[in-house]
Length: 191
Image 1: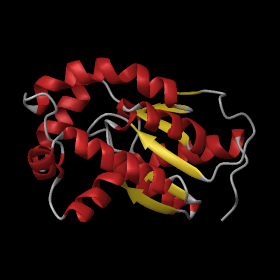
Image 2: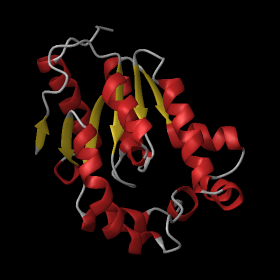
Image 3: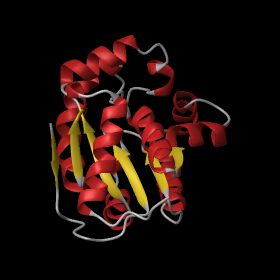
Image 4: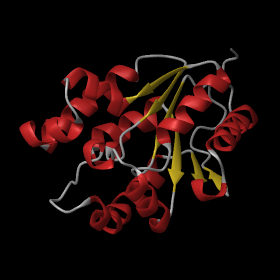
């Protein structure tokens, strides 16, 4: 199931951001979508990890969440100046008003939405989850899911142009749905 917001109308799209909670498949779908439409792909967490020379968990431990969020915002600003790019954001990108504004103004935003049960299952099965997705409030990742999903859901909804419930589709199917919706509702520059 999916739903579309008409916030963009009939505008040209040169940037797509994929938002959503941890472990919903932003990177996988983003890579598939970028390959499908012939655009570049950027995974914000991967880029930040490379720039830091350490994991996000290590960075946060040394410099704190505010420092991480600032670097994340700087990277989003940088990516917003590029064209023909699909960006997989971090799950908390929408927690800063600056990022919300930038996403709304410069990106066609796809929210990959999952229920709590699905998110918990995926986090538990992801061996790298603790390293790549550190807890935000001193709790383990699983205990944070309820709190953060409730906090972030209205923000994801506010910023998104298209919402796709991931439980119903494979990543390749999600990428095709996004491509079809863009072709149907927007002027997407051809490859």
